[in-house]
Image (cartoon, rainbow, N blue to C red; front, side):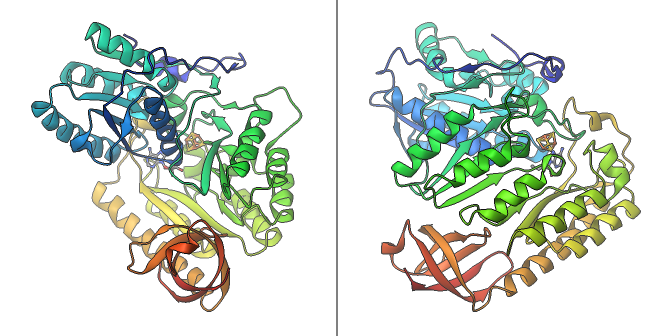
Amino acid sequence: MNMPNMKEARVRTKDKHKIIKDDYIVLNKNIGVGKKYNVITYGCQMNVHDSENIKAILEDMGYSYVDSIDEADLIVVNTCAIRENAHNKVSGMLGRIKHLKQTKKDLITIFCGCMAQEEGYVKNLVAKYRWIDIIVGTHNFHKIPIYLDNLYKTKLNQVEVYSIEGDVYENIPVKRDSKYKAWVNIMYGCDKFCSYCIVPYTRGKQRSRDYHDILKEVNDLVNQGYLEVTLLGQNVNAYGKDLDIDYDMANLLEDVAKTNIKRVRFITSHPWDFTDKMIDVIAKYDNIMPYIHLPLQSGSNKVLKDMNRRYTKEEYTTLFYKIKSKVKNVAISTDIIVGFPTESEEDFLETLNLVKELKYDLAYTFIFSKREATRAYDMKDDTSLIEKKKRLARLNEVVNENAYLNNLAYLDKVIDVLIEDVSDKDGYLMGYSDTMKLVNVKADLSYLGKIVKVRITSIKTWSLDGEVVEC
Ligand code: 5AD
Ligand code: SF4
């Protein structure tokens, strides 16, 4: 049994990570034959992609996918730790699974993801949720076959969580959710240690993949007919900085753009590492999508300093306008936290005014949530939750207005949309524009998996409606 340890998770040495290509082994390929599995995923795209790996790993062991947890023999809960409310959602799900387990004694539960890396949470799980069979962390989920094997053989719960800096594991199988667009990890972990954020503790140090492996993956995806890749990492702009090579995110973006992939996206960018060279590459290649997620977090220099964000509001604004002026028709979205412990009404007003000025296409807004082991955990916080909720509502009003006004500019325009699924709206399909606008398109199923020209006929705050004009 290996339990998480937040103190160890914080350690950063000068040691280089290893790139390990032969660690994924399935000794017993029949363990899951005749059994069904379901994976429940919470959180960011990184988790969504990890779940794609976990699905493939389970299928490698003979398990077959089933849509509902009620029919599953094995349930994986892949969790997120970024805010406290993620805990509440997971607790609700664990309650449902416990209930299922009462009638299905052989049901196996695997708990993984970022919450599995949280020391306090896992201590509680081990003590009070003994019916959870396997707890596995973010660094070693590719070893699920070994833990399942041990579980069947010994009937003992497996708790294997490592609070380490981590390595890069290649050759883990993947079962992608989409046939048209794919997530491609380019780096793992984060060394920024923003004072509110638990990610550097749950995901380990920043470690880039070898770019040859990334480019091979993209080329393989092109050959399989994929149209879009999203390069994934906690801080993609820092790609390569942890390797002893003269090759950075701008080089990688350019090399990915030069493959035959139709669309390239990347998330998430930290303003600190966003270079002019990167902006030039984004502007130069038509297949690098003009959409950039650029987390602001706060518009107050005092709060940004307390958050350990490493930029001022002026530096952020300069970067924002540089991107706007160089990348044609670019859409920019952001993340903002309100109610950080040291945020006063004046600080909040600075954020509000900056958001009014920058008119983001989209902003994900959050109330600050205290996370175990982070520096902000112990900061004095005088603002009530009611006041924080009011600030969030005031901010969202501006965010929504901006989103609507940005969308208004699309009315009657013809834009490219990659049609990826049927829409919730009857008779419509759905997809995303180059600028990441969600578009409902009146079209029949023959358009699925195609990039089509769509005339926008009506707009809403969070989506556009349109019709196909040509294929
Ligand atoms: N409380 C609230 N929001 C947070 N985020 C990260 N940590 C916290 C926290 N402790 C937000 C940031 C980040 C996004 C992914 O989640 O805005 O950019
Ligand atoms: Fe968290 Fe900051 Fe790293 Fe983003 S850059 S994952 S907010 S520590």
